[in-house]
Length: 361
Ligand SMILES: [Zn+2]
Image (cartoon, rainbow, N blue to C red; front, side, top):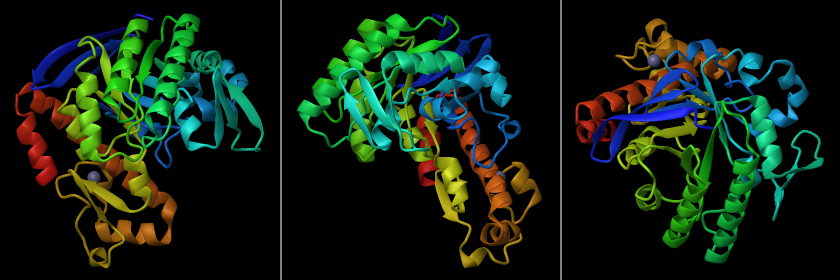
């Protein structure tokens, strides 16, 4: 369980640059994790993720397909998917919210999206799945409910999450796997505080601030993260799940968040939306029909070094598969470049200036 070591190299305000050692691998935060839900990124082979240190795999989906019997043959997800860097697995908690289900006191009754049947996941099964996947970081099964849910429902949700967290903590035995707790509580400061204290009393290897990026305003999100993060220990990583747009990450890095994951860059790419610093533009726009320039002038990604906007637009409109590859690659490289520059700006005590240049640039 104690396989993760966080060394804070620099701080600029509350923004922090950490060097983290995990299972013999070293990475720096703030960090963005691409989402490989079913063991792959949609439309981009792993070999193109040169700058990526951690990818995210999904417990619910991998349990159903390919199933644990297949994963066991490979001694875990790394070998099965051919990824020798780090993997974080989520717990199934997010699908408890996003897929029709029933929360029970001792777990979640899920619908199998492939055949409509039902199966029950309790905190131990979530741990069994993640320990079989042998990810480097596992998450506790949590009870995630709508951000708009009222006080009593949020209270019940954090009480369940604490109980499930306790069960997960006691049951978890994979010494090469870090286990992170998840703080819930909706918009209620008092409940976030209670949830954070509950999680810290269980002493996890890192803490996620959960229940965000599901409908709150950016201002509300900042407020929630600000008072939650103040309670968390410096020597553990802080992770905001399901958020990964550039401006959203910058706002939370400023508060001291270290880790993010999101399908955002890949999903934007499949819709022809091209990331350029903190903004994006729509490549389908007619004005790019004759444009001989790359997507972004100074981008050094394979796509920008080789192809014009006009050609990529043509592919996008007429032959989607290869365009998804080219555009996803660009969006990941842009995102990783920004995180690189963020880390450098923290080191040089210029984070504020950098953030402004991206958001307003
Ligand atoms: Zn590019």
